[in-house]
Image (cartoon, rainbow, N blue to C red; front, side, top):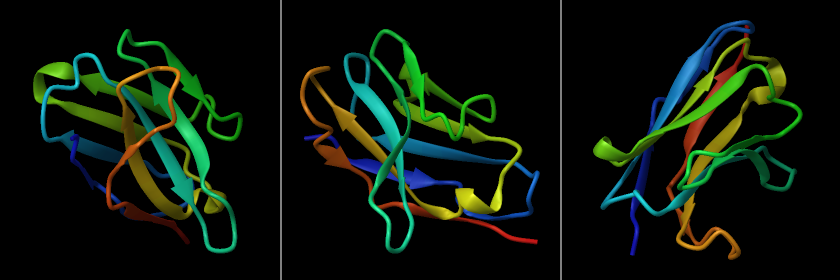
Length: 117
């Protein structure tokens, strides 16, 4: 069982930055991690993923603006969000899975990110 706790959400202005953190309850050394988001009336969408080996993948909407990273020593995954846009407003969820080929099956409780002027 992997428990995930997000932090770092809040209010930012368009063009601003926020950094989300997700702390895991145990070692993340061999775990694949991701960030997803959901807005009211829309399906949950993938934002960024990072494999246990460090390979990154991003949604087209955030490429060049967001960066996912991991610190295995701290059992933490991060999402650095720069050049925020109004459309980035959502609840952001951290997710984990043990096998690359399975669906993400461990989820955090979510953290609200609001971009507003």
